[in-house]
Amino acid sequence: TRIQVPVEEEKKEEKKEEKKEEKMDTETNGVGPSEPTENQAEETAEKIEKSDSEMKEGECEVIDEKPKTKTKTIQTPLTVTSAKEGFSDKELLAAQERENAMIATDKLIRDRQMAKNSVEEYVYSIRDKLYGKLEKFMKEQEKEAYMAELTKTEDWLYDEGENCQKQVYIDKLASLRKAGDAAELRYVEAEARPGAMNLLAHSLVHVKKAIDLIEQKDEKYDHLTDEDKATLVAKTTEIDQVYNVYCTKLTAVDLTSPPPVTVSQINDKKKELEDKCNPILNKPKPKVEPPPAPAAEEAPKEGGDAPADTPMDSTPDAKSEEQPDPASMELD
Image (tube, rainbow, N blue to C red):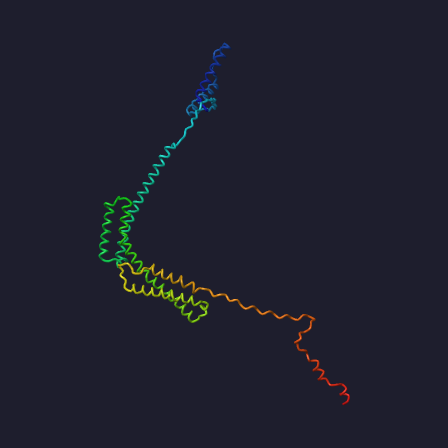
């Protein structure tokens, strides 16, 4: 550490030491104190003024001192105790059972709320449809009674049916859907029925055209047998009669009553016709093996005799006949 010592105390100590020295000198020499000279008096006055000014300014000397530190070692005994943290097996099992119970309760509440919302949603949805696309598919008296039932159910949901069991909501929704689903089914059948009848008629026309080509001995079907033709004619006649019956039943259809012919029945007849006739019409022609190619004639070997039937060349004989005889030429 650094200790600050005022200069004033140091000056006082120096003055005391000077006085002691002067006293000792007088005692040893047997002479009293001598009077100070003029120079000594001036020096003493300057020292006093200087010390006073330093005291006023508060200047201090800084002395550095390093404190001595001591290290002391203390041994403290440490006791270690092992302990198991957390739940015991019994407590953990009980906590898991409580958790499972809470999960089951939450699921039950959620399922009950979803069942209630389903009833409310169906009430609003079927009511809008009865004023829209389902208006023609329910009789007026039935519609009035059904609308009253929907209103009664809506009021019940916000009163007595606020906190019922899940099964109560399921039963209520099932009873409402009986009349509503019947009207929706009649609507779907009426929308899809014309398209299904057109597809059945198209399949009949396709098979009838193929039978006409078979009777005309068309090259495309000339490989079919008489049995195949008889099968096509029989199945086409059967489905054609069914088609005519369907057309008669669907001439005047009451949209508020169950349909006399369903789209499923029409599609089944179309599938029956195609499954029976298409394999015959798509039967491939049998493969005809081409006749074997004729074997090439062998060429005559080099140096061999020419064939017997080869005509001999008569050109040299002709030349000899044309040239005149030299003996006759001399005679002339």
